[in-house]
Image (cartoon, rainbow, N blue to C red; front, top):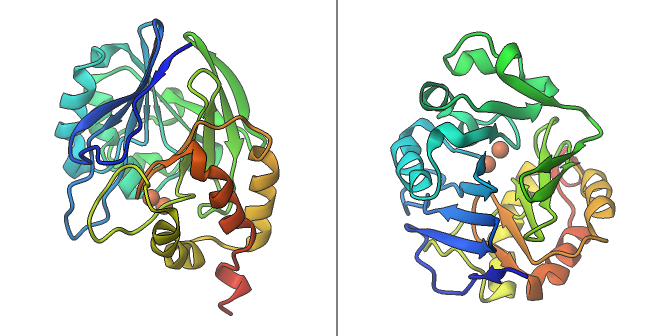
Length: 255
Ligand SMILES: [Fe+2]
Ligand SMILES: [Fe+2]
């Protein structure tokens, strides 16, 4: 029904439409900078004119994310700013988003009372809390499934399946530390070597990985879109799940 634009060689410093149909759009916001700091991937869904910003990123990339989002939607029409978890690389720009939009913050319930420490008041009234078991939400022309991924790595962590684009937004699962930034995986075996050390350190235990795999492995997935590293296209998703299923992480290897 729609068209995909996921090709190796896309410039990670520029925004790109990744999926488009007549009512629904998914955009990578061009957030990688190739700096010494941890680079992030921020995404935007626009569906029937309503927006959801997925992992807006830290304070320092706010102006870029705002400028690039504004090419696709008036920020006042962004209904939700979603945080897969509480980390500063995901949520540091939140007070600035509170200034330019009336978006509700979508986040696991555990983090609501921590959010004021990012620098704004009254987080309870502006937060849509996700329960432990997740939630299914009709949004514009799509349905979004908020799928629990707790302890991977945060104790309140979510992934999102967008039924319209068939994209799985995986937060800190599937991330990679890249020497040279790229946004679409071409060489999967090389990419796995870039994913392995950070998963071993960040993910609490392989038992949590297995729980999550059981929740997502039946889905029809066009691409995996993590919050760092590169997008894993359909042809490599099986290999990605296989990599995770066989991984020992966190307390499995470090005691
Ligand atoms: Fe994180
Ligand atoms: Fe992260």
